[in-house]
Image 1 (cartoon, rainbow, N blue to C red):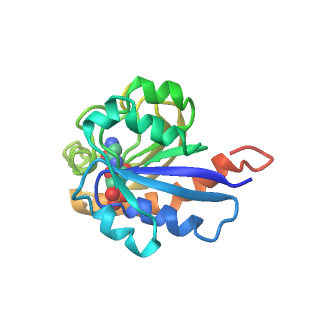
Image 2 (cartoon, helix red, strand yellow):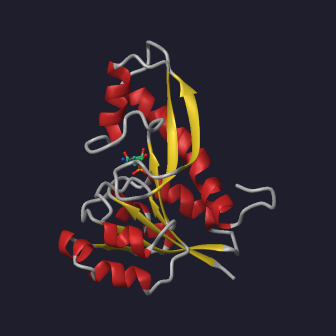
Length: 193
Ligand code: GAR
């Protein structure tokens, strides 16, 4: 039976696009809906060629149970946060236990928590003269960026790297690994994820 995934994004949506491309020809996994909290998000335009509507929601529907009911009615096997910046409420976490995952643009537990998203993360990595950074894909629980880690990959940095080049390196890792990790999670190989 086809597994349904639902994507949440707040911005540009390059990860959303990559995930949709990856599963376009896959008979076992289907992107059934994409949601954004941002009416100006790049992801809305970006997804037009795919014929998948990006649904915009506001804060009240996110927190008062309206959106949660709507999403539950779609019977998602996995909810994927791909650059989604609002904190997930405990009602979502308990309704979709072990069914919400997030991608974070650093090697958690470093550079996680409130305010640590996008370029803020890469600027902090640069400020601290880190020799490496990377990506973390993890389950979502009630605390920002603290759910169980499913996957990490790192990339080396040099003194010449800027926050912008760090962002590019991290995005490349995300685009390479996010969809395959989702695929392995939903269709585990016999020897595990
Ligand atoms: C990604 O780098 C993702 O890891 C990050 O936002 C970017 C979205 O890029 N998420 C966070 O910082 C969450 N704390 P995209 O819109 O091009 O996919």
